[in-house]
Image 1 (cartoon, rainbow, N blue to C red):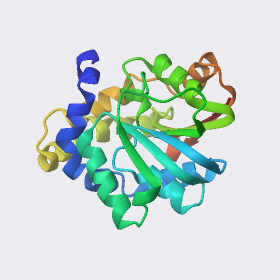
Image 2 (spheres, rainbow, N blue to C red; image 1 turned 45 degrees about the horizontal axis):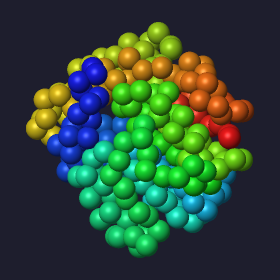
Image 3 (cartoon, helix red, strand yellow; image 1 turned 90 degrees about the horizontal axis):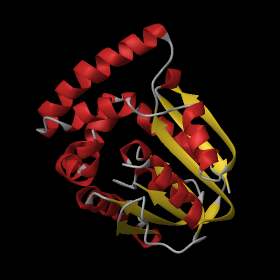
Amino acid sequence: MDSEKQHIGQLFDRIAPTYDGLNHGLSLNIDRLWRKKTVAMMTSAQHVLDVAIGTADLAIAMLRAGKAERVIGLDLSEQMMAIGKEKCTKAGLADKVDFFYGNAQEMPFEEASFDAVTCAFGCRNFSDLDAGLKEFYRVLKPGGQVTILEFSYPTGRYIRALYDFYFSRVLPFIGRVVSKDKTAYTYLNKSVKSFCWGEAFAQHLHDAGFKEEHFIPLTFGIATIYIANK
């Protein structure tokens, strides 16, 4: 798993052309609703850092909702960001989003640079979660909010059984056929099941220095929104 995380940028570069279509299709567009809910939970901010911006779905959503005046995006996948830039241009938002290649655990930004920090489906890919969250805290202005959307592992017995079947059998097969990548969607399942969620993730936020941390499970606990303040 560690070696996979070290090469996460290259992994997402390989699946970038099919990433959006697969995500929306395999989730039955529920991922769009998760992002919409995440944006609704955010407080409005002028200067927002979107970590693991990828193809810019969350950045576009928060700009359209008026929750951000300008977004700085950071990601390890050049190909994902290239698609994100195209989407921002088509949405008429190219002048409101800047993209930077970089590691979330060693961000090239000054302390207290942003009014808010967001991250959708990126934290579980960090090789060191605590280092990443401490960087979130460092670059956030006092009084700022961090909002994180991440996959989690459902607790209900029957939902978990269905989830395991879908994520271990169905999703990797379809992902492999469409993206032509044998490992990417197998990695997704492994990364979710080995990652922390709920109270455990909230504790990591607290340990990084954040206050008033809380979380909202979505769709039987398949995903979770985490919110905390500096």
